[in-house]
Image 1 (spheres, helix red, strand yellow):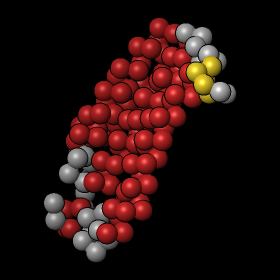
Image 2 (tube, one colour; image 1 turned 45 degrees about the vertical axis):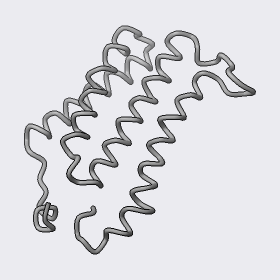
Image 3 (cartoon, helix red, strand yellow; image 1 turned 180 degrees about the horizontal axis):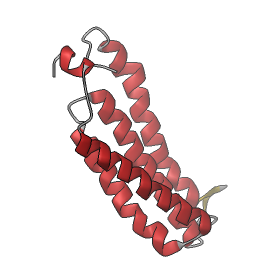
Image 4 (tube, one colour; image 1 turned 90 degrees about the vertical axis):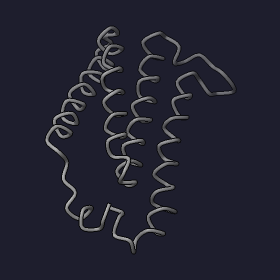
Length: 134
């Protein structure tokens, strides 16, 4: 993709509609979590996660977008695991020392942080002159 194409990058309307629907699913998932509505919360994991994967795939040609969208995907994974651990009463089960099942959600959370750290600390500084990083 050329610098000119990146500078005028526009999200196609079908992508934008999908992103907006993604937000609706995510909100329903989190509302269900807050209200402890297990069936709705669990059901909303799938469309929320699938759409985030599709969004990441569609932005694979722009690394900055891909990195952020992958971070969102692993965030949803962590968030969903945490929600399910609470729904099934496993969140407080100790797995080692003071770490509980809920703390396993830190694995995808940290994966997202590492993806973005790589982008901002390593990738972006090395590519700032090519005009292809946001």
